[in-house]
Length: 320
Image (cartoon, rainbow, N blue to C red; front, top):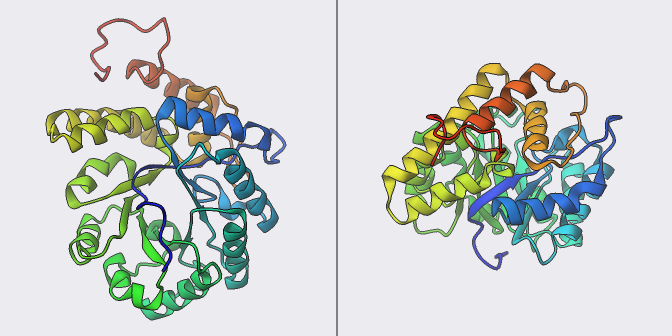
């Protein structure tokens, strides 16, 4: 059975794929990106080529090159690098899984195929099993994101007996707001050392109470430090401080969601906060508007997420 050096836990940044203005991948900034995550945000685990990384908008060869660059640049700096290898084609997914193993990734993750969909648990597990078998030495994670895949099979149901079918199964990335389903995943698998990684950043504190062992999300690229403070407060049972941190994070997410917030806007915010150019998204996504960027920057400043000298002291919205 595959087993990582340690269970994947804590914050995992769902990495952005930097692009040039012409829509080509900008590999040159990934090394700087690694250093920023580790040194500025305190995030040492990453999830590559997922939703935030526009993985399904990249060609297979591009996905391989992106994975290689993260593994190469992250060596001796990052703790764990999980590569998302989901695809509509089983053969492509297996090819990506084999490649991830070859380059030294720490794990692989797969979403449910979402065009010709599996209509019950057994069919989905059979698909996942075939992908996992292509990289038998790597920990395997299921990426549960029903809002995007349209596959409504409950994670609780999927986990029932899954390790008997997929010996390398180590946990799941749960990107859904159904805390009943998530809680039952935890409750019914307490005897197993699964990684229960929550994927809805603005609800993370609730998931921690339900037993989440970590989190995978896009905001940890630029709000990792603040979220780590929440995790630390939770660990020391300072629930009042943990709640204040979560509310602070929610203020920003709530604000940008009302403006229209997705991968394109995440790239714009990451560029603002890190100073590393993330570039535009790839079609069919559209570049974030100047108006969005200006509003997001003002909100980041008001919440003290950007340490600019023109911030006013005593801002009532600032988070301590």
